[in-house]
Length: 245
Ligand code: UDP
Image 1: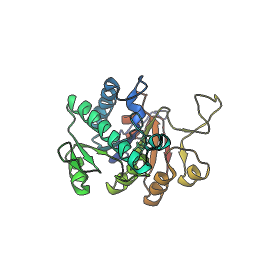
Image 2 (image 1 turned 90 degrees about the vertical axis):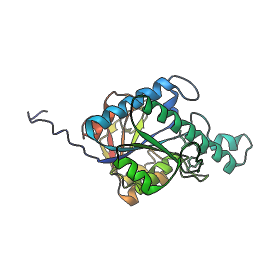
Image 3 (image 1 turned 60 degrees about the vertical axis):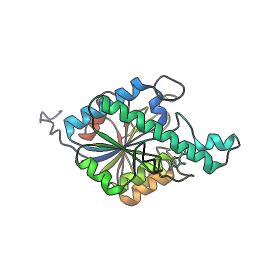
């Protein structure tokens, strides 16, 4: 550290919900689930759990398999298409469960659409108990309702689980003034206010997710999924991220 003091390595956020988009699971593929990519996320999660003792839950989107809006554009009824989108998130949740359990991380999947032979139904107090016991809880099927997204589902579960932060893993290491892949002069923000994100339409997450985080006073931490060790560093208050609070 610049002043020569030791890093305290203290966990900044004791209980965290990590939101991954479905597309993150595609890895180099153009569609679907790329298991080596799921395994590399699982390894990041496993080492963060081991080294920080964080209580962690996950929400994974479904955009790598099916989006309700796509179905609606192709002539399906929107609510029906959204049910398919929610089922896609269950597939992703099961894939991540498999990746995590392959490397010894205990997990439970809880679905907002009950499917008891496949996973647990969503039960709030049970989910909290799982996390207290060191299990990673993967929340599937978003909010269980059409016309919502998994960003909003993630915000809802983060609030219900009394999380200290919602982590949003993205392709880049924070929120920028423009797309840093297209605009070299794009500026990265260390901190932003919820209102600023909404007013400037910075598109970190859906507006409904951001406003729920604002109302419940839970910070959103945006960081890169592709920097090895980033999850652990950001949990310890180090590394690069944008904190929206
Ligand atoms: N979805 C829904 N209700 C929810 C969450 C998701 O209907 O509470 C459906 C919706 O059709 C959405 C799809 O599931 O398009 C996949 O979720 P999302 O688009 O949020 O996934 P991501 O963009 O994060 O991969």
